Structure formats: structure tokens, C-alpha cells
Image 1 (cartoon, one colour):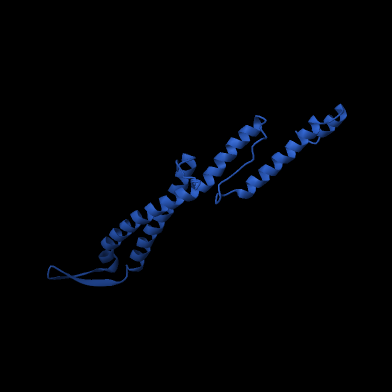
Image 2 (cartoon, helix red, strand yellow; image 1 turned 30 degrees about the vertical axis):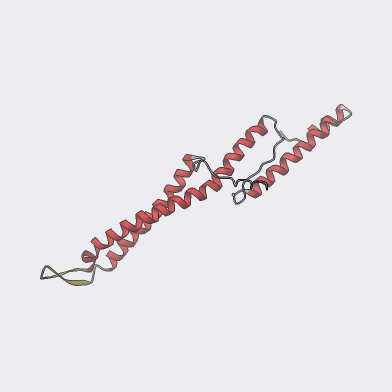
Length: 168
């Protein structure tokens, strides 16, 4: 019985730290903005109503906004922490599906610049930019075909004609 091939496991969650950190911070700031907007909206809408409360045997009359503000701030703070942690994990995983292919393209374009046309672009299943990867592979194949045609040319004119198809 042959062993099952091991599924690829990620060893490094940060591929492009700058991109991924900005990506995560933007989403966390959106969560924070939404939380504080909620508190501000509730306080603003509750300004013109009054609430009667009894604390330590005393009756107190306050605006509803003053009465709710401490409770709202505590609730929103807990919600902000929990949702921010979830957002960090989700955006890190999602940004990895973008940063990984971008890093792979950078490496492949460097190899292409050095003249290495031997390796096709391969991305993991589920990664973004699959169509761009296919277009890259098609372009490299067309360039490789032109180079093969120039190498196999029997005359200098055929080589020149093939090289003239490249625009520089």
C-alpha cells in the first residue's frame, strides 16, 4: 500500500508583508468605523428622549443617550475585538490567495527576463489570477515557438523575418 501524497501546507502566511498588512488594516479600520458609527448614530437618535432609572434607591432622569452610552461603548468594544480578530484571520487567508500568485509572477517574470522559458506558471487551486497565469503561459509558448522557428531557420532572411515579429 503506497502512502497518500501529503497535501501542501502553508508554512508562511506572510508572503508580501507590506501588501498583506495594509490589506488587513484597511478591513479592520472599516470594522472600527462601522462600530463607532453605530454608537454615534444610536446616541444621536436617542438625544431627544429621556430615560428614568433607579440606582441606589434614587430616581434619576437622563437623556437616553447618556443612559445607553456606557453600555454601548462596552458592547461595541467587545464586538470590535472579536470581529477584528475574525477579520484579521479571514483577510490574511484571503490576501494569501492574491499575494502568493503575485509573488509567483514576480519570480517567473524575473526568470523570463533572464531568458528562461522552460517553466510554465503554476498556481495552487483556489488562488486568484488563474486566467492571468494561463495568458502568461500562452504568451511564453508563443515566444518559445518563435525562438524555435528562428533556431531552425535555414537562412539568415528567415531568422530576420522571425525576429521582426517581435516589437521592441
